[in-house]
Length: 457
Ligand SMILES: Cc1ncc(COP(=O)(O)O)c(C=O)c1O
Image (tube, rainbow, N blue to C red; front, side, top):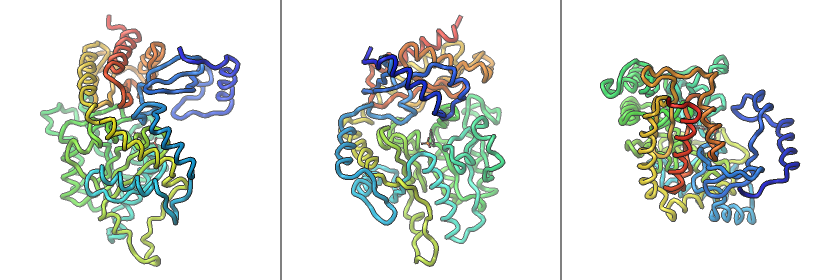
């Protein structure tokens, strides 16, 4: 047990929250009736609430924490920068951390991505990417290229452009009437194949469908946008090997831009710095955020090739300017923390140290697959989804209203682990700094929580 707040203060915070806040992705009727956990402190992979309970952070505080909470080097970078200046604009000016971070990112990004456009969160990074791709073709005189191709089950954020290229019915269909129209290809959801095929006999038919669409409509398509290797919010849906590479090669052949959304997968989550490295793919545009600041501050980047960038160069009167920007673009505090975070990747040998953790993760997840209510336990690096099913043989899912994912997560919370499900999929995404012993404990809790919430006999 850690320090707790006096009960009166805790109760007041809860009352203030209930009276004034509206939480994201939350049915507030249920929230107003529930007894919320108030997180007040964090250290390493642990979070502490106002009642003094300590929890493991099993979802990296919404998929962004990397080095743990209150990491001395990141705290210091933030403080040191705040003693100089907290914010000045990138519209018409620059600042040291933004310039230095730009150079540091170009060194680690897939080759060719030499230009860094800052924004504040994943959704805005995607908006920037879509507008950039569209405007690129306008400057090139290919005015018919006004559409995007994305996948079913995709998630690219919650602003309208990002929603338009999303493919999760429960999140996105409400907004259908106000979304731009585009092309949707099948997801690579092998466990529930949309084409009713089996992997590997299918020969990656889902990727072939995407390629057929590109062949038929390529001259209308500005870009393909994908989450490489794993569709996160769609249910941690891993792609079979070669899927990304196949689409990439078709994009190259047909000269359609490829935007990779590495907002969740970037910065080591899949075992490599960026997921596209697993398949030797170099996108035209890439979106990164979440782990960019180690999970400390909102910051995002849309990185582009010289080819894209140079299409925007011209005289003032040519109106080739990219008319897009946000107030906090290139914020010096966030950029300083991101720089310090990148240094830690080298200093703490984050990527080198990941491999044994990924191996343990893999072993324990496959053990979980034996549970009769686990349909599939899949992962890419340290990003995992455990899909719960009513019946393993028929793969029959639980009805949405049964909230079985939540039942498992609530059980985990009681046992000291914070998780958040995506429907019937229990997501597990620990901070990369987790050690083997902690990872072992975390997986024990997950196993126990599933067994308690959904007894196997
Ligand atoms: C792949 C992907 N793209 C975009 C986003 C949106 O990022 P943000 O929530 O910072 O807007 C997310 C968030 O989970 C994501 O996983």
